[in-house]
Image (cartoon, rainbow, N blue to C red; front, side, top):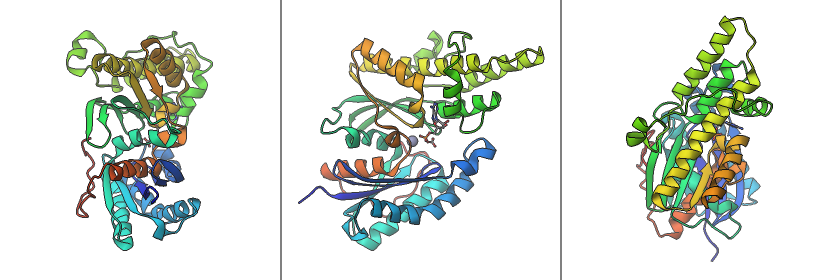
Length: 344
Ligand code: KG4
Ligand code: ZN
């Protein structure tokens, strides 16, 4: 018998994602994003996201099943992100997943979103799955977390996370300061290409010796955002032009530096020579370059799934569900709640 066909549902933020896998084989990955609806607010509005999921979830499930060339009767199990994320957004996905599993009479698996990002690796591995343990750095608009994954099924440790803004949020806010449209990450990346990353020395959050004791693997980006805002404000007050490319490049450098310093510290401290990146911010050109550079220098194997599996998607949730099934894990109870602060 073939590996089970698992349908995965992801609705923790603004992407309605439904993916289908057969074991480690990717069959479908359909995403509908409500990003455009949030643009005029400069960030994701939870109520708007939840309503958009409610409208999209049915059609996206249908589209994924069609993309896989299957019918609903071929689905052997349903997996869903039950947290962490926006409460109302999660409820839509969890409700849909329970209803689907009930109606098909198949097992239901509630999984953690962050662990799902790690689960994406097998879909891109081409027969060379990541070995464990691995360190994982997950960076998006909603989270910035550093994990030590000893075993994806039952031994994942949160080493650190942001104590304020997520890195993607910082990109979005700094873009706004510079007058660039939302989402800001790609915009900053674009204009930074023509700037000097050494033009301005912006702060690296929680990197001073006094912070490193308690927050060695934690991140903070709100001070960086404020530093950029002050710097730009001073220029404007003085009636001087703002060197947008230099500010963007210097800001991007500060984010990339602190992310990779802490991730490679984690590899060194734990003696784990593997680093997996995930989340939409991993699209950033400087973060990718610096990751390759520093991982090579440290003798660390670097894994970066393709972009479509780095941003929030249902395929990674399906892939994690398939790995739980293979490990013999019992299905989740149909009474399981959506949990916006679900721990790993
Ligand atoms: O993983 P993702 O699609 O999910 C959400 O958190 O919703 O990440 C979106 C975030 C946004 O904050 C966006 O500005 C950021 O990823 N982003 C980037 C880049 N592309 C997207 N940040 C930096 N550089 C990029 N090239
Ligand atoms: Zn995510």
